[in-house]
Image (tube, rainbow, N blue to C red):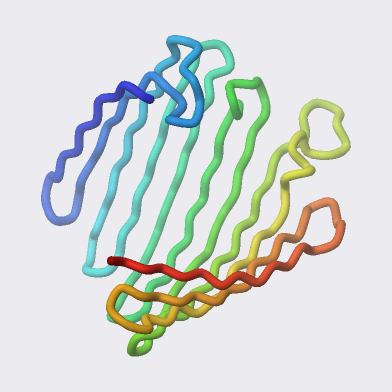
Length: 184
């Protein structure tokens, strides 16, 4: 597990900031080095329903991994729409391996039913004289669309459709899901 320090400060109703230092990569990875990750975020709520967040983290020395993220959302009554952009330089602390992606998502609630959709574009860059981006096999477009039914207190049923279109032009992968949430 990580050993970490986290602090959050709310300046007023419109501005808050957070800072985080950790020594690990999370619960799924055994800590094998003494690398620290330093993170900072700033959240702005200039008007009711509108949120903007900027985030940055830094980890490592020589080929330091750096992550930048920008998030914008707007929510009124039953509608919420959002967009996000992420970029990671030196992924897994490997020089020049840059990943980036953007997402658009939203939901609309009508009585006890919520409709939702999401689109993600995942990209990597070409390194040196390479013809394809370094992570080309995992680059592509993801799509999700579904409906969440709040059947009864503590019970939600969510049929949804998910698709993955690889950047290499190979066949799109389509999967239908039926999710169920039970809260006791």
